[in-house]
Length: 130
Image (cartoon, rainbow, N blue to C red; front, side):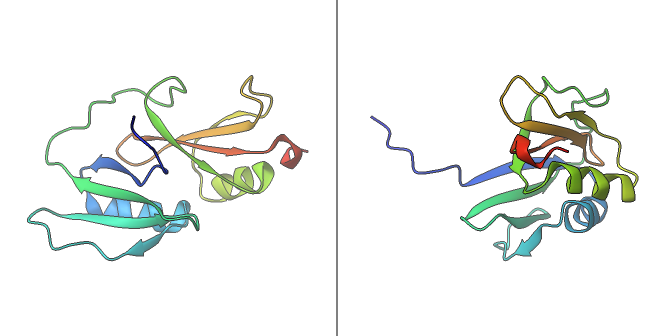
């Protein structure tokens, strides 16, 4: 049997590393961490305080997603403290989002896309919804 400890990292394909770094550092608020000297460009980020990471990998082709925010498409989720504060932050940065404060999941959800149309979910305890 496989004995899973946790998700270590999620990797996303990006086409413009500087644009992606600007988005993940400024909008999402992730902090860069050291990355090995691979023979291809990318960036690594710490996600939260328990060791999970996000790895950006530059790909010279198109990303496969062609439409906007589809909440049933592949995505990764980041837990946030406040649904309302996250909405305010996204609006301040003029980021399009789909909010599901009463999601059937039992927690509030907000979906966005990055500059390469990778889907990100922010979710929060429903008690943070006003």
